[in-house]
Image 1 (cartoon, rainbow, N blue to C red):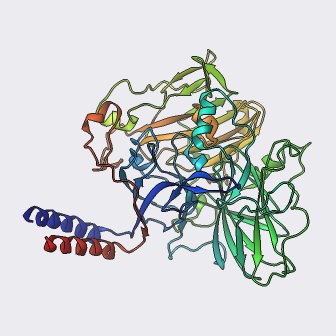
Image 2: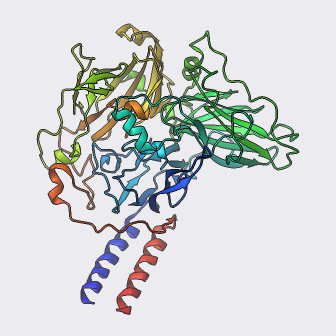
Length: 593
């Protein structure tokens, strides 16, 4: 009992210090990640759920919140959770990718602890390992403005999160084996909306008995739709029958408000639309996400359909689905859509100053990297994908952890600034850079499919895109004033996209394609950002006390007794109430003994 009381006193001291010193609120989540059985396309299959929810819960946060997420891995394989678009300010330890964090073993739990510092917007989380996102495990992250920072549009009457994405009836382990065996994944079996299959808009294409998503709305009201493409590899065109999509935000940046009848949303991208319920209620309306840049006659079934239902609706949705873009002979349609999205430089986001007050176009570039992808190649008898001729091999020891403990040989700092001309190689090669450098990165897509690229820990400015091969003369077309700032950008086949980013966060940061098949096969790298003045515990946060160890450091790991699945829940209680509840329960336990 004495030992328990001493532990309690220590815990109370730490908890009290957290509550007393915290200037920003804390929000707590307790997640049990497990398999459940669902039938999104009519066939029972294992999907990854969080607290038995598929998709997982939406994290409703506010700028500068401190976020604590306790994750219990009830899967039968290692797990990580990555927070797509959340800028882990100087804290890559919480990024949830193999370059920085050891996976959570089956039956173990690990607690993420990070702050959504100076951020607003629409993002999502997902499991990044071993094609697990193809089985689910994803959910939304909504970061709201602080009350003192105005939003550049009237407050909507509701906030709706919608996940769209291609889906296979095969399990993620079967899909993984196909890639390991050098096979293509082939055409998906459908497109899900919020984890559900298509509404039966066509009796011959959609079998009976499939559950579909219905979004209920009130006539005359305006709703904010946060739409995330959490799929595997398919670009989708999003549209709502007879309704206008007013784009206002993407991945943390308010955009100039502009109206679309449809918008291409590529894998890993997130957009916010304001949609006004201004139609009559003679019937429900179709919400559609259909495959892009494919043979539409063959890919007809790869269409997600949900229902928008007015409260006074008089009947079911009818008529054909709203038409997708007709750009068979105009390959610039989708690119021109993307080019038209501009940042609203006159408004604030997380801070009062306008988004455009940081004049990225006038900053001298420190380093230039051209990252080129090609169609898959064979390396050492295995089908692989590459960036600049290098297929990334994830190390057994997280690279940031290897640096901390001075473990050599885990990675190399020889990632080329321009694509190599020799035969492709497989290695753990990363981009070497310095704190406060300003990078220009050109993604050159010499494959035949759209790729989307994401950089962890950062938002970057999309300054240009065009068809053909990028050259230094291409800089003459750059937008150096109001290019949108985001974390995931599309690169069209046979085209390039240029981005700029300010390296204001030390650590290791993942650069990857969001297309799961090409990512799994090696199309990624990392940027190593080092403070030349040291800066550990100054410009970079120290390693967390609950660090997991693996690879060359596995002997440092203390065993955790697997404790399997449990009924978990999330809590958004203020820190004083949260800690008080925990302390009271511990006090009770001590005195019961």
